[in-house]
Length: 463
Image (cartoon, rainbow, N blue to C red; front, side):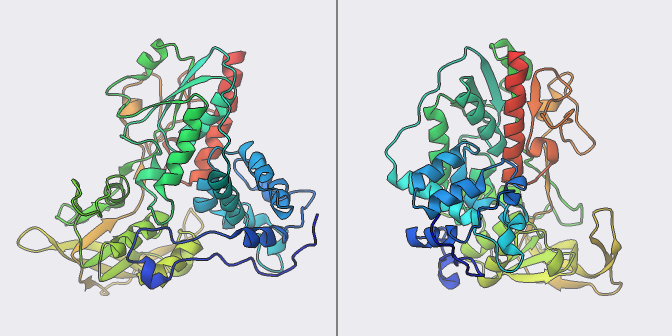
């Protein structure tokens, strides 16, 4: 091992200037250079008990891959990553490392943790840009498995099972594979060419991807079994948007964040001549405080909005979005109206949004989630002058699959019920994971569920 780098702070990530990037959809973070990556990797202490690994949902051997980078063996590092994840370039960009692997890093006790996510991104990008090797097709084992949904959990299940020799077919409802990676996360956080490359790698090891396949309409679960599949994984996500049920939500100019981002990310509504144009509002209010709300607000700014507000009923400290995303949003000129909650969306004679009426909030006693409950301050109503409102208060799974599949049960939130961590549902041979089970959550948690389900499906078929 080369000499340790004992700097207390991680190597800063190069980024576009805020006043430049808030006018384009190019990636904000520019990535480490070779020397930056090697230098950052040498901050790792290679702890024997590997606390960082215990906090990784897909159990990457983090010290081992970082040690390879420290020794300038980048391809060796990629091989270690590939043993645990099929989407390293994605995870390195969108995984909330600060609450997972980096949150357990020993270097973070007296300084900043090792930039694990940044190193994962570097290794994946370096391999993609420099390696000419093609994936090796595994030896077929004679068994077939179907996957519903080409999002993070579905792609993970497909990749793991394909490596075991299974013939895997993914049925995707949209015209492009990738799920939330292509329709939800903006280009400036996750370039779609990178997602497509990861999908191409899966196809190269034998995974078939059938798009425009709305399961429950085109095919049912029963019909998929009749095609010779011995098990089915449901990773259909949670794409059904929620609203507040306040007056004015049916006005023109009110979007769900899901629709807003899908039009921008999947349909390129921001490009000239788009077949699915989107309103270029001057003043936008985004209701919510999660990562999706940040994505919507930052996208609205890039569409040319002069003022973009985040309206959130709790304070800055309670924002559920990643700290990095909040900081980037602030740098780009997003205005945070925290401790405020909408009570009505106002409209003009043409049925267009003309404002949003809010009420000030204050934090009371903690609720069941452990966070202090927001309480209205009587008489504090005010109107925010906006011409578009984007609702980003969560999503639920679409009921189509469960409503067309006998024996497949869901809870009162519409999420599929699984019997244990394997993802086995109430229907024999049907497994599920990701947002279809948990409701809207993170990419890496969906991938972790996919890995667990792949292992369980292999055991189920081979028993």
